Length: 178
Length: 337
Image 1 (cartoon, rainbow over the protein chains, first blue to last red):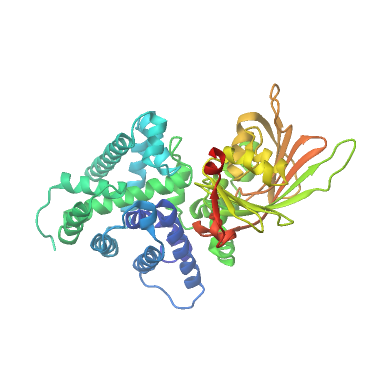
Image 2 (cartoon, each protein chain N blue to C red; image 1 turned 90 degrees about the horizontal axis):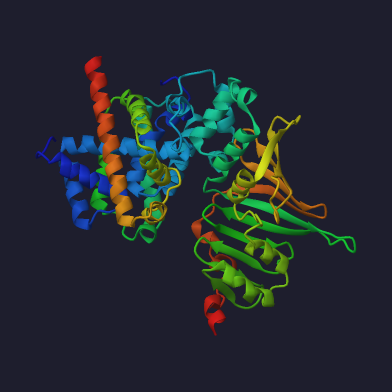
């Protein structure tokens, strides 16, 4: 993996980084913007002669710094009502930077998620698409489903938990089989 | 480091609540404490975090609505391949420009596929071009277009009128005629219009703006365009593409230019008060619509040409950016006087 161009290595870590960025910002648009900004740093780094020993750790730090910079610069409070507490921001950042999960877990989980998504009933899948594809707010989803924002939020929370449990189950089965 | 035992169900509820943005300050504090002290809480959080990121990536790249295909996973797995050209290409431009075209992962994935010669040559069609264009148009990127309106009839030929339009998804746009007679826009919530002198008129209901503006603004035709449900004025390109998808038969036009795909769209029979034909040219790599020509009749045309893609601040679409320090009058209030 280390022989791959940096930007390609960076792309392979996209989901991991986007997960962290969303956890930090709870704003898909801002998370994407930070991810792109960090990619610029990666590209610029690739033009420099020195080598990076541990790209994942280095890129994590780049993403973390970009995230903190963006959060300070942008008034996310205005968009989300209340900013995340500094202690939770710090805790999330620490969890991210200290994570030493094996890199192989990422594609395995991706495969499991795919199967779990394919197993979702159409109406639940539509809710997932509305939330993650169109970045719809709960009140917008509620209009579509004829419910309330709170009900839409609860429905999506249940789906998230279902998907997560499904991934865990499949990962466990795969581990037992190997 | 392993800390106190935690109730996994409780922690997972907090984690899901965190991603929903629904936690109270107290709950955030409990979650922060758990993440700082419990290895199990960290693992649950990381696992949810990876899933969240993956769902956002799949959604961003348009893979959620239909059964998830191998292509989506392949984008994540990107095995080492002879991709030097693609990577050099990506490095040669600022990544913001890549972002302005489509999401980074999809764009790079398409470039990689192009270098291996397996995508367009085998699968390109009018539908695939339209789909790519819709995905590109859905990006929350600011795009500046030059709009040219041409109107003529048997008695007279009016000089084409030019406008500069900057638009982003979510209904945000700013439009200004070339002569600078006014500037009009929406920040996604309020619509506003300002002339070089005088107040800024603001309304949250664009349709109610029209009768007021007809008395105040000389360029009524453009306002009629904006107000008509039959007119795809393209406040963002998504509107035009959705319009094409619903109402038109589409066909890919052969072209010698490998950098673009040309699609011509013909109005389905039985439709009235709509453009008779729409042609658009999309960038072959990114799907971004570079220009579009809309024919209403033999004598009436609209042409959009992409001038640039950029990343502007949210505040750029607010009237205060374009008419700073002006008096603000809400047209809703004026209407009810």
